[in-house]
Length: 74
Image (cartoon, rainbow, N blue to C red):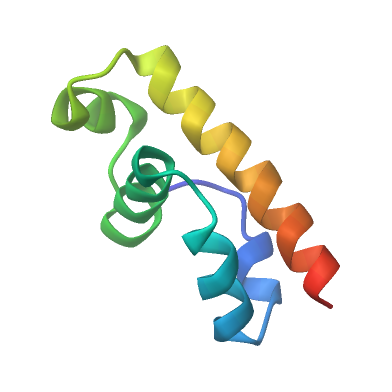
């Protein structure tokens, strides 16, 4: 599991849902599989048939975007 727990700091699920919907499909899927299903970067890479660097970038950029989106919503 990933250590970024900032998502748990936001009480309004509708804001999180809005922000997640702003992500591109592959980034949204990566976040969902990593955080809700516990996939590792390696498992995501194999499942999505994408290089591990690509998966890591999707997750990293998505977390940055989600944090900024949620900060702006408050």
